[in-house]
Length: 70
Image (cartoon, rainbow, N blue to C red):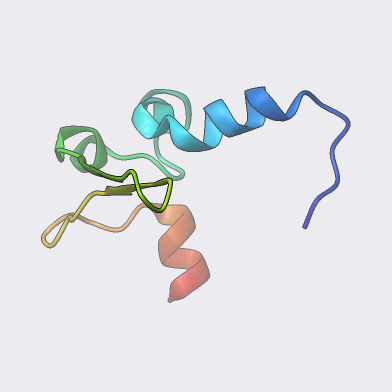
């Protein structure tokens, strides 16, 4: 957990809009494979939940995640 003095809406936008990963964090958490892989979005209106997923079975793991997960 990292307490921040910031407008929470901007943080939510940053964390939910992962389309910027490859362009702003390239070589760290974003790769061309990440950008090229489509995203699936499902909405459960009853539960008030949005599910977003991106399956990259054959993509190379970005360096940050490879280092943290082995």
